[in-house]
Amino acid sequence: MTTENKDLEEGLEREADTVEESEDVAEAAEKAAEESDIKTDNEEETAETEEKPDKKKKKGFKKKDKKDEQIEELNDKYQRLFAEFQNFRTRSDKEKSAMFEVGARSIVEKILPVVDNIERGVAALSEEDLDSPVGQGMNLIYKQLLQTLEDMGVEAIEAKGQEFDPELHNAVMHEDNDELGENIVSEELQKGYKYKDTVVRHSMVKVAN
Image (cartoon, rainbow, N blue to C red; front, top):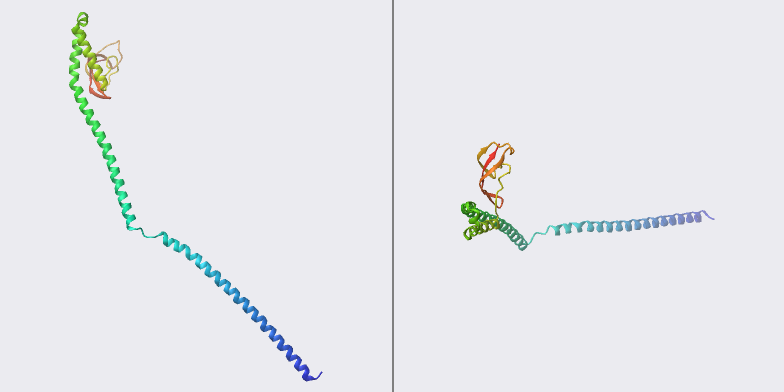
């Protein structure tokens, strides 16, 4: 082989190597470009996904409609007025009940002297007089009057033999009595009455010891 042929072959081999290296570089560049495109697509998808919640948040803070605001305002006013009306009705019922009780106590106070007089008249009758038509009539009227007062909620206060209670009894006399304990009512001088747990008239009593 001549020197010229050797040089020719070596030149061809070098050019072939250069071509192969160029092809390898081109393939590497294509791969890098594809990877870059994939990464760019992923970043865009991620950005879109992150932007969606922001849009939802913006939708959540949507300004209320004027009609909705007016409805809420009217509803609030209605609830306030209804609560005030309920309080007024409750207060009115209590005031009416209190006024009725005050009026009833006033009537009972005026009737009690009549009851006292009838009671004294019946007590003053003898057994023969009680058996007479007049005595029986007086006794029936007295019982009927007491029953009517009881139906109204009026009841007599127990006094004789009970411990003295300043909220129920009015002590006008005092005595020493060894047979009774301390602060015991020994005698009832005038009956006291209550109307629905409210004292209309205190019992007038004598207290022992």
